[in-house]
Image (cartoon, rainbow, N blue to C red; front, side, top):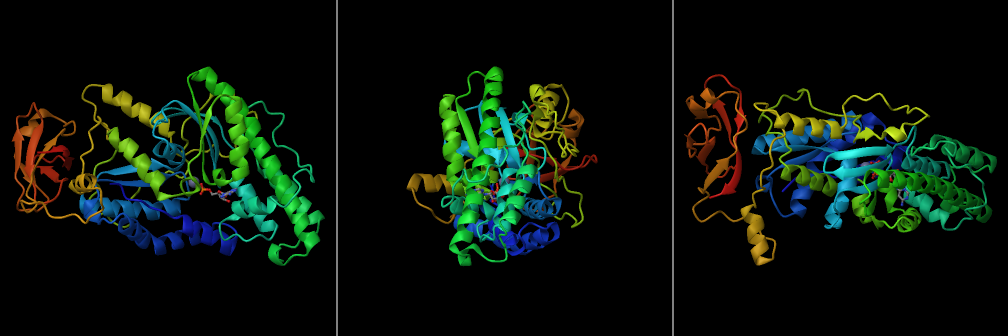
Length: 484
Ligand code: KG4
Ligand code: ZN
């Protein structure tokens, strides 16, 4: 089981109160909520921290102050319970959650990911292997929806997008002729900054006062606001449609076998967006896969699911130290591309956001796969292991009901077979005297032949233990593969 972290209510609350997300306030709100959010997720799943088998957490992209809160909590949890940890890419999670809702969704597929901070068109070739066909050169579509809502004096309780969508239903979408962005660019990139300015000017010219909530506006005033909302939405989505059509053509050239177009991210909750993109998908003989709204907006399930996908492939980091200092350097990736830019898609309008701190997720995974093929090379993400079914899950599966975990009949002293020691620096280390640093008296470690690299452990309840090899090598982790 992977822990779920869900911050959606915090973001909506900040948007409502301040009309945006100020980093310092966002950090404070995260700090105040994090423990309760995790506890609620565990309660909802009817489990405790002891039942977890791994922890997944978003490490980027995003505001580093907020990422830090989540990552610190996740590391504390993983360190305390000696659990592996999976660092997740936020946008990959938006795409992969579609594979949770539609289990036959196989790679390769195309995805349009639209949220408050990102507009991405990607070709997902495999798990962790993405080609970026298009991105935004300034603002994302969600940001344009949020600002439009704020300037129109709409209720931001559920963020700006839903409010604009609702009001747009009353308006005439052809009443204002906003210009479709980037018509002259034959690429798949997006730009919403110009459309935002067009909307602001239209609002000013109609003398709409955002201080008067739309609920108390006169009939004509409300009508004018609805026309702007509808006209904005038509052009904002037309921009998505045009770029998506071109991206599908490019994707077919690279992967002629694609069958699905995934539409995800907060803006994908919008019914108008869904229906327009469905038409584009059908025209290209693709099936549109759109997760339900609760899984399109930021949510913990998508992070947990992406964690599971990588965990199954053996891509995870070993448990962090139990007592990590509060000011420890954390691996946060505020700017972290998902994949490399498609050569044909290099924008003539250069992105303002090209200053990247980290290599893309795709290049990192490809490098780790390559490294692993080199003899004697140790990479933190190693060979696949099979996930161990937790005794509780097994019990639930058999009985078909949710129960609290009961102690095993032997008092929890089940012997565990651990296999796959990580690649060790040298064979002689294995022959050294080993001692267990976990402090558990019921532990008994036995190295069964240095060549086979198999150890047997008897532990009271833990499935993860940390060892010191006397020779001075630092912690070496042992991963289990099956219960005896
Ligand atoms: O993916 P998300 O929850 O968070 C980010 O990663 O940014 O997306 C949030 C964005 C917000 O800008 C919000 O206004 C927008 O998704 N959104 C919508 C709708 N629901 C949420 N935009 C348009 N129509 C909606 N129904
Ligand atoms: Zn998101």
